Image 1: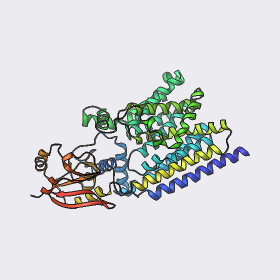
Image 2 (image 1 turned 90 degrees about the horizontal axis):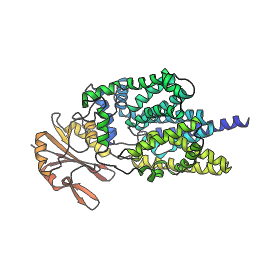
Image 3 (image 1 turned 45 degrees about the horizontal axis):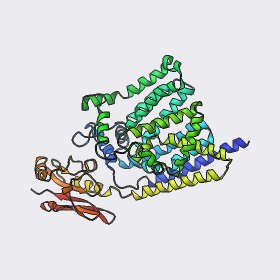
Image 4 (image 1 turned 135 degrees about the vertical axis):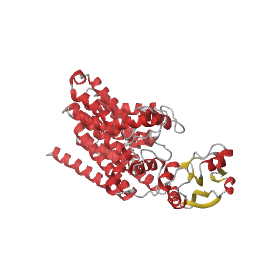
Length: 473
């Protein structure tokens, strides 16, 4: 009876967490009125697919992006009509499904208590909350990769037929974000660790899983061959693009920013990892620890590092943290103190997530409004000069050319590309130095723009963030 009451307690607690977080996400789902660069890329790709133009934006750019998310958006638009609001409404649904799948999966591995903590930590993660409301691939990747991991575990422990489903899901995870490559690597390495020779040598469904993964990638191979002259050309272009300019950090970057990524709850990785290592002979422990280690190693090795990259395998780390909480509680004999501390850490993360969502509500709004305005005034046979190509391409629906690095080439590039408007955005860091006139910490367009007709400016709050100039005949 006591065990049954305990199960009911965790089920009720999980349901309350799901209601709280789900309500929060739906309340804030449309709070942000602007667009980030990558958000506009996905929407622009989806719009071109919807219009039958092909998989690119602007002047055949961004074709290296994994295509699944853009194709999904374009399909939804064909079914329900073109609406950015529709996609924003879908994002909380994806996040809630991820929390539910994590709970079900972790419960299968470790029982109700660990499952509750894992779902609570994910649901209250500030990074998870914030990026679950962005039109980015992180949210959908978490859901698909979780399903792939779950099906793989079932295939290992119970029914080999699930290898086929796992291969398909791994394919879609890779076509959502290239860090999905970690999953097929784990797929191949884990049986070697378990020393399951029969699985590697005799199990047909195991190898059918690999085949199904490759079959799902056939359209991507085809696109790569057309656009880059190689079936895997997009992957190499992506690798070169993401390491081109910013966020080139040392291997220990994620350790230095551990609490910035996970919050104080991240401290429980220590007991979680120790317990899993000590009991590595148990398949469930080796499964979680090896997958977490493999994902961390991958992100440590790639030169470009951002805090949000670790979100891709956040559910795996939440399981590790949860093991740490439960095992440490048992070791300490603490029924209340340690759980209350962990809950307090989760609450802090949740509040930090709300703060991040709230502070970003105006981010990018000025440029989005500028693009909407320019769509009405820019002649269709002309182009716009700006550094933030994706947002203006998506909103203004005109081709964009960048400012030249050399000031002396400005007018030549304007006339050669038939530029009718210039757009300068305060937030975009890639403008050449000659574009700006600095006044302390503030910047404004330099005097060279006195040669053009000022058209309009756009504010975020009380500050001007975007300036638009017209090129006169």
